[in-house]
Amino acid sequence: MTTSTDQRPRAALFDLDGTLVDTNYLHSLTWWQALHQNGHDVPMARIHRAIGMGGDRILEHLLGSAHDPSQDQRLRDAHHALYATWFDSLPVLDRAADLLRAIAERGLRIVLASSASADEVEAIRAALGADDVISGATSADDVDRSKPAPDLVHQALALTDAAPGEAVFVGDTVWDVEAAARAGVPCIGLLTGGISEAELTAAGPVTVYRGPPELLRSLDSSPLAGKAPRPQG
Image 1 (cartoon, helix red, strand yellow):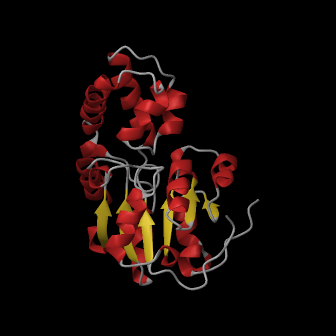
Image 2 (spheres, helix red, strand yellow; image 1 turned 30 degrees about the vertical axis):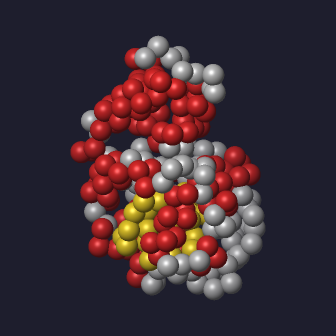
């Protein structure tokens, strides 16, 4: 997708893991540990590429439709317990909070749209320290289907009173781009989640930036300002 917005958007929807906080590899590690503890040998590279899906999707994606779903809750609980040990030290990406404040100063409503659980979202919000500019948040607990389904994006839009064409989604995975596209919302891709620029670009975001600092520097010429996307190189 290479279309531009026709006017300044009213809302900015943000993924969290890999977009505002540097946690994709923590999720990869703790999912690997949870799977390994329960007898599943899944390469960490495969797990990393699945991060961004919610817990309702990731296990079938990694283990296949023939796996025993009766173990899923135990695996999800094990991952959550392992990941929760990091709640007090989640690494915030450079300039992430500054980016949110700069967007809010330009009059856009900011809503978080994450496939994480509600308590994970709360831990990330505490680490970000930017609740003064965040209008609301959705989590996997709020919807029946997580990314790449569009449910979280629809739910986030409902919190902004903006139409799909009046919002921009910012995420770091192909699942973010796919969920936004299914909801009719243009997506900005960030390379902070460990997905290659070629793969992320192929998913169809309007443009790609290296991370929050580059997007912040380019904010007034970005889709968040209603500008056409920069050429893909």
